[in-house]
Every structure is written in structure tokens, then in C-alpha cells.
Image (cartoon, rainbow, N blue to C red; front, top):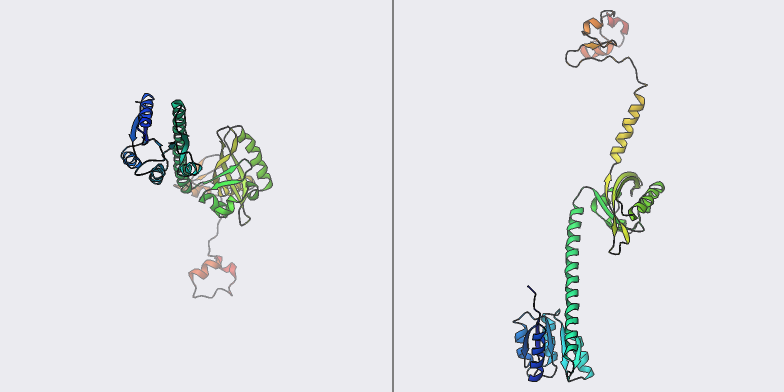
Length: 333
């Protein structure tokens, strides 16, 4: 169903009201008319009027008073003045009250008024759409910020020159800098030379519309190296012009350290003693080099042992005796 626009015509001249009413009804408007400002305002506040056409010189309330009242309560309503009082000060007052146009009487071309009305309504539609779009954008941005501020990973955005435009708390914590300090910085300021070269190379990839994942090294406020993994996506404006990138950041410093420890162990394992004897944790049997498993008693059948107690154990077991002057060899028997 097509929505019919509602127009309010306020004029004390009956001939003007009737001709404009007839014309705009033919133009498929819903038309309301009033012979003075007071009755015009009554209609305005009882109906959802889309546009107002008003004279200036009228009984009870003149056009300026009408426009003041409308502008105060519903400033977004477009108004057009149609008047024979073409004084300069009246025109200025009308424009200050929000009039979108000023048409002087006598009206010789109703099509010209129709064109003006439709143009004003179209501008109003575009303005409303822009406001709605901005509202949705603000709501989306608020939701986005709420999400990013509450996730464990760092999140930041940069412009096409790598200047920070946004950073969440997790990322600020990684760097040790405050949000204000980060937003006054460039990626170059908190990365080493080799890492920033990687960033620049990756930016060229982003400009081609490709997302990517890579690792770099940051230098935090304490001048410590922080290894991070970045998952980056490009940001383009409506004209498909590259604006920058958004990155999700993960601190992999501990993972890097563990990898280095593992590699160090891996590199050393071949230099360790090769005379390691595997023992079963359950039955205590020992595996020979032939891969056979034998009882622990059988493994030591060819070994000779003497029995005794070492000096350290003697001191622990018999603290009341003095062992300091004893020959340690004597404790073996």
C-alpha cells in the first residue's frame, strides 16, 4: 500500500485554500486546510502532517507564530511560506523558523509549487534515511565495541598508514600502554624493524582484499619483546578505497618459549646417555637390548654387591652417635 503524504494549507484567502486543496488532491495528497493560524495549529497537532504551506498575514495567529510553534515541537517538519507579504524582514524571519522556501503571491504556476513541495519532501526523506542509517551505524558500533571490549583476544584497527584508530583493553594490556597512548601511535612505534617490514608487506596483500594470518614481534612499554599472532582483514569504504585493517591479536610469547625449550631438548636428546634401562612401571621388569623383558632379579644376577650404610644415612638413622671421626669406609660393613 502506497503511503499518501499529508499536507496542511493555512491561508485566510478562501480562493487560495480551495485552489491549492483541489490541486494537491489531484496530486494524491491527503489535504487539510485552515483559515487562520490557530485552527491550523489545532489540525497540525492532531494529525501526522508531512508538510505545511502557510501564509504570513492571518488573523488570530500569523504565519510566524505558527512556524515558531511547529519548529519548537516538531522541528523536523518541513514548511513552505506562500504569502503576498514579500518584505525582506518577513522572508528572513520565515527562513529562521525553518521555512524551506518562500513563494510569493499571486500564484501563477501551481506546477512550480508542486515541484517545490515534492523536492522538499524528497530532501526530508533523504535526511530521515541518513539519520536512520547513522543510528543503526552507532548501534552496530556500540554492539561491536561491547563485544570487542569483553573478549580475551586483543583487537585493533589501523588506517591505510598504520596509524591506530581503535584498540580494545586486551590489546592495551598486551602493550602496557593506555588506550590514549595507543591511539596516538603507529604500528611502527611498537614493533621492531623486521616486524614492521612484515606489516608493510602484509598491507599490500590487504589492499588486494585478502585477509591473512601472520606473526610479528611487538615491543611493550617495558621494552620487552612480545610475540603476537595477527589475523587481519581489510576495511574498504563505499568507493572500494582501502581504508585500513582490523586485526585480532593473540599473545603467543609463552608458546614461542615452550617451542624453544622443546627444540633445545630435542637437539640434546641424541647427546644424552644411551645406557638408559627401560623398566616397566607396573611389574618392574627390565627390557633388554634384545627387546626381551626379564625380572629385575635376573637382570642383576651377574652383578656383585656389598652391603652397608653410607655415612649420610647413618647420621640420619642414628643421630645420637658421632660419626664425624669415623672412617667413612668402615660404615660399609
